Image 1 (cartoon, rainbow, N blue to C red):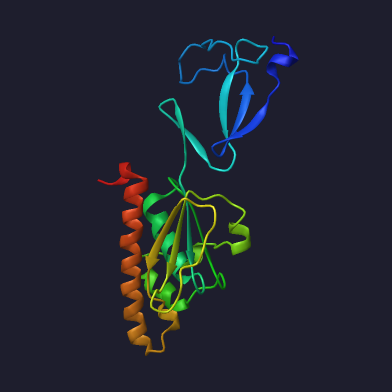
Image 2 (tube, rainbow, N blue to C red; image 1 turned 90 degrees about the vertical axis):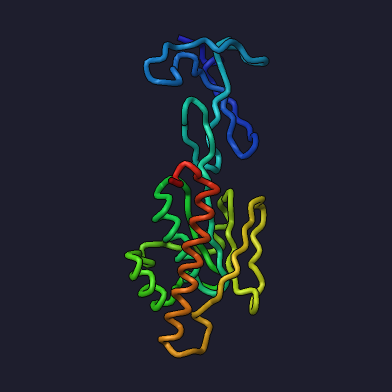
Length: 211
């Protein structure tokens, strides 16, 4: 058994990950692989410690012996959450649990019931999505933030501290003073645009899902 000094952990931040010095020399990286001595690291008393990356903010997974962060995407719309809900709903349909997904909106987390009916035509349920309040979402880290607005009437909402900021120009049917039948057609157009945009984003983030 190793002495306490050899099994104690040290922590530090590196590239969004938490670094931890732990005794992993006896833990195989793959099933049926014999334990390996990785040698000592400078400044460690144990000679059999190595660096283990423990995810600090991003969810991580082990693939083929290498660890990579799981993409996390936030859909952020002006007005209420109707368009951002639609985007998250399509993303969940396409990617499942391959990506961390969330949505929020500038004004409220409510959505237009007409949009819910339009999405039901695709067999999708907007009420199954639970948007975050902006203040809550700001406390989290996202690898990609998609901001949605109608550039003819609005400005894109701002999201700090994100390198991958994507802008989608989409009409907001809820704000249009038109007959219900016409509004429904506009919603279908927006729905189809969102579906296409989400699919292209999934192609970029998860190319292995694309046939």
